[in-house]
Length: 357
Image 1 (cartoon, rainbow, N blue to C red):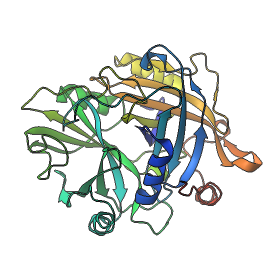
Image 2: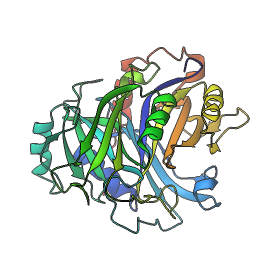
Image 3: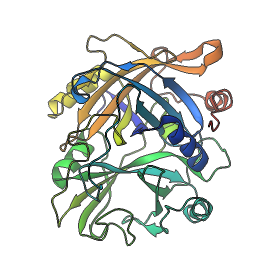
């Protein structure tokens, strides 16, 4: 993987039917309150996943600078989003839960459960990590995992995204993909049993094979912000799982993608093709820069063996003070050198988002 670099999980996409209501909830409950970018334009380059038509949408990427990946909150503007037609169960194919960093699981469970009813008591993951589950206001499941990593102290119990829980149909094929393509080469646990002792989702007490994978320490400009992450693969052993996004569009309600921060995208493109996972979307197939207003870069998509969408983003320009047009041109930096914490502190002050009604 020397010809390109993956710096970690940049964000996990969450499709919603109400952009503002969702973001308010993530600010209030999880502290996802620093806006990196916000866009209200037409998604013209995702045609393979939007019925062959461009659609207008309202989206933002927001982070918690205490540490972890961001949230991409996404809503169609001129199309009624299509919810999943069935109750998503453990092991259904796709991302059925997102992992959220937390410095103290017991303390955060006590704090959150006092104001939000859809919380489940703490338990241990198969690798011994303390966790608990919570559903957001639209029923999306979050696995809150204990992680002591702090990037910039914000005096919060939570950080950002720490990984994803993904339903798969063939465990060996999926392990191979996440290990060889995305660098999750460390096996933390490989167990068989029930998913949870609580009814966090339908079929939680059925029998599953669960594999938790981690990656060696990542490098890159944003690697220290993103921190460590894990991918948890879950294979149903007692029923045939369903595809969460079968017959629906990218951006419809639910977890729409896991996005990785990448450097040297052209090399990544060749590598993915050599592994049998070619780019299905490439925003800049001729090497041009995709302009997103305050930010710029290049994005692409590949699919895991079950069709779960993996986004790859190479950042070009990063906004620091939007009102003054101040940003960073990433192409002029050493890609392995971390960005100074001072910049993130500045962003956390000038790009702070408050709850809006």
